[in-house]
Image (cartoon, rainbow, N blue to C red; front, side, top):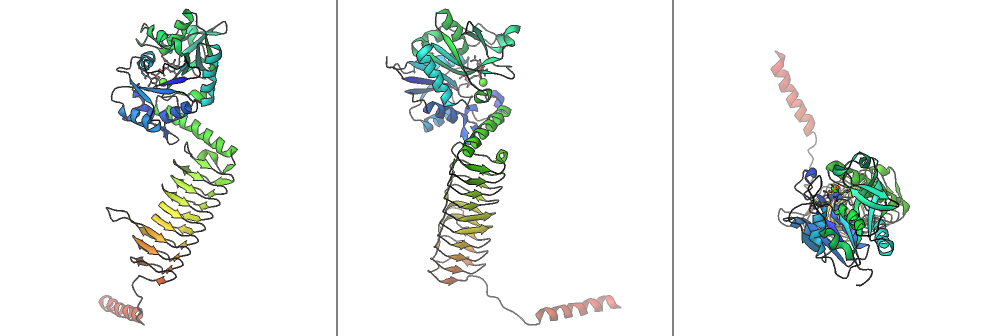
Amino acid sequence: MTSNALSTVILAAGKGTRMKSRLPKVLHEIAGRPMLGHVLASVDALDGVRTVLVVGPGMDEVSRYAKSVDPETVIAIQQEPRGTGDAARSASSNVSSASDVVLVLFGDTPLVRSETLAHMVDQCRKASDIVILGFEAVDPTGYGRIVALDGEVARIVEHKDANEAELAIRHCFGGPMAVRAAHFSSLLAKLTDDNAQGELYLTDIVALGRAAGLYCSAVFCKESDIQGVNSRAQLASAEATMQERLREAAMAGGVTFLDPATAYLSFDTRFGQDVVVGQNVVFGPGCEIADGVTIKAFSHLEGAIVAESAEIGPFARIRPGTEIGRKAKIGNFVETKKAKIEEGAKVSHLSYIGDARVGAGANIGAGTITCNYDGYNKFFTDIGAGAFIGSNSSLVAPVKIGDGAYVGSGSVVTKDVATDALAVARGRQMEKRGWAAAFRAKNESIKKASSGD
Ligand code: UD1
Ligand code: CA
């Protein structure tokens, strides 16, 4: 047997009925990533040899997602949801024979820290046959209670099977369990469904292990790290915990939040130092924000790379594929998508810049729109360095505005504009002297004639 070869089993075959959703429970997102993605990431950090995911029949969406994260994931099918012990059994033949420890995790407890899991695995290798993860519950209702005896974990009793004394125990089982691989299958084989729910409980392997002379211990973590998600309310609570964690990490790295509770981050949001984030700012997945960037209130960003000292918002919508250069400025009510805004360029108000490049130092006037879509295809607008686009212009793509060119306000530009040229594409202004006065005089006299006598 090779040492230090960890196999992980993730249980995700439960129906998740309390979510009231067509989407499988473990695919509901926390901080922009499915719960299962958080669990897989916590496992990834452990350097294991194999991950086995247990799903129910027809849960292909879940398997596909896991494979997209880690193509090596082995999928095991639990034919019927007959309990966590049965689910673990479905996986046991897929556990790598080279493994020394098997770590069982639940797909619906996405906040467990990988350091905690590493500690459990380590304790299992060094000093214990089974290590369970426990926590002290403010309200233990529904959780399995940890029954301790002489400093050992004697058994876990499920809420529905507990007597009054056991119900008073506030030390609860959180889900993760590390088991020496040599005992994993044999302990699971001994499970019976002789309990209140008529299920095979994974938790019973603790008492079975003890009866076989094995030693079981516990690692404890904070309740907020182990909260399970069975309902939408619990999903919201897990989201809040994750947001707090992400903001704390960002602040520790040098980000100022003007009102931390109103900033929403994604699992992968990356910040440099001295970034200032205003009130009510949302970061969807895929954002990288460099040093010294200021993002003002009510801005929404996703899939955006923002370079040093750029300024965004308030009220900006930055969509996927946007790259904002150093010291560039995106102002209020500006939407960008697949747009490269180069160094020092300014798009200050009320614009849509999609499928476009805005060259360094260019100035885009208020109300400028890149007309990038004809209902079938998307076309590119290329605006050269130092160009000046007058307010309320429509740039009908594909179109290229040369470096340093000017576009007159209100133009509808359909043809390329040469470097340093001026393009004006709007109706010519004409003027009739005295027309308004004559018009008024005529109408006033008609009004008088019809009401006078
Ligand atoms: C389980 C524990 C309980 C613990 C709690 C922590 C058991 C018997 N009970 O209870 O001690 O305090 O978690 O949150 O283990 N699953 C399957 N197949 C099944 C049943 C469940 O794959 O047949 C999966 C679910 O998808 C879920 C996980 O196992 O990811 C836990 O199942 P769940 O029914 O939510 O267990 P709890 O009742 O919460
Ligand atoms: Ca649960």
